[in-house]
View: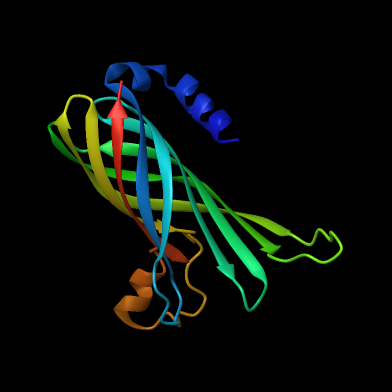
Length: 191
């Protein structure tokens, strides 16, 4: 699925891939749920494919995190896949960029110790939009170091909990809500 999305993005915008570069790289991500509970960020490892021109770019990323809970006899694996359109604000060695696009968030819960070969794995996939801002530094022509902060599961319908009172309520109706955030740091090698 990831390769199909990447191929579609590259064929849809061939000038993006040829103008500056096509790159492959690795990254670390820290994901935090937007909840009232005091939860720590969860670290994911993954990679991305990027195709960049002077101002525009496309990124397809895949991250993965797996954790076992012995007392519950469960192993939980999460794999977010995101396709992002990048808008770069500068063409120099350091460039701020805006990003946004769709994401597919896969989760699998499986038993660690199964009984009698029962297949009781639970797999879910959620769809959501993401948007954010980042910075890429190009120490050489073929290497890019980048980091970004993105909001995930954007909700453009407004916050139902807001009573609409005051200036904050009026402005809040026009701002999207979100269910989480993601900080990523990565390096891409451009060809």
